Image (cartoon, rainbow, N blue to C red; front, side, top):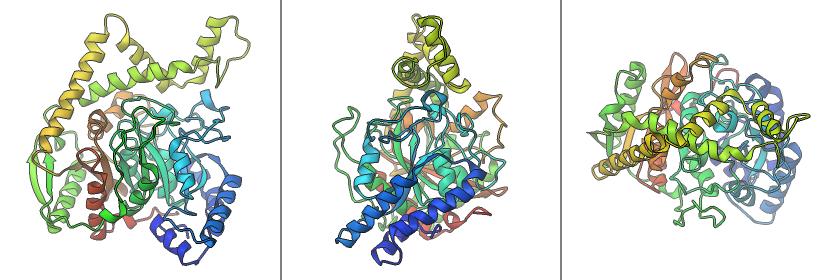
Length: 483
């Protein structure tokens, strides 16, 4: 049962080939057996899962149906779950049990999804390798000596290892798409505002967006259907109708205009990945797509702009973790200042501290105009580049990452090298656009992803292209050895 996709699970449950309780028990046993190898979970929620599975079976017995009714999933451990530890991968929140459910958690629970647990992640979603978690690094199922990508590496590794069919994740600068590329999955970052951020612990509020990680575009469509929609509790949520994502999968690609930015194929891209991307382009051409070279001239400025804006917002968002109201508190503080300093110094890891320091500096008096304001102006230029491009093409295609997954620890002493791995994904977050990564092949036995970007609220177009591509290729069906 562990090899089934969400779509196959839905059909199996509808045909009474197995129950949700049987499926949940099977996957919980598999997690207990295999997860010690990859460390993809922070918390397991066996009692909750079995209770939800039993309720889902009863709902089906009473005539209810639904693609997610009885389907097992997991949540990245920054989505608040009532009464369950929500740690954000940090010592700071190791003892925090959320008093409410995030909107994403509540919506998926209402649809009948079964929560198996909370997945490991880079601390406060800050990282590209899932090595900064207080609970230890996550390992890539394709090669246990390599990273699975971050910050949603726990969700990605769990799905790739067939511990569950799909999981929620978040994307601030590529944290859904990059792990998807590194672990041979399909990952979708929706348009900013498409999925509610209420109850999703913030890293950078103007960039964060929740989305699905799964093995296929079809499964991403199913999970996104349950996650998307307007939420009055979230001031950044946009009241835009949610289409039937699954119904859009079968559309023809005949005449689809695909733009390929010339800036993507620079010296920084592994030539073996470039070859796989060109192979993907040829496959889409066979399906009727028309390829056109385009330009995104301000892409070169995206990484420095992002690494001013995101840390600036993080320094503000994380100021609430002070050892007073909730979370970690140091022992025997001498006074209030000592309480603040030691609680934050002991509760946050080095990567989080680094980004808080950078952000506080960028927002400080005398530097705001020189750094933060200039970065926001670059952000507008990046968005304008995309708007110009989308006047000529329907989607934009390129690599998800410049290199395959690197070895654990290889970039730990050089954070800037890790930041540069986000060069292709960051622009979508700066502009608020939807982006998708799908499997495109392998380099040295490690997966490679191809990225698709679309205009605002056209997630259905991305899913359609990815699904048609996956009907004609088999990269997404490959399974890591031992799992």
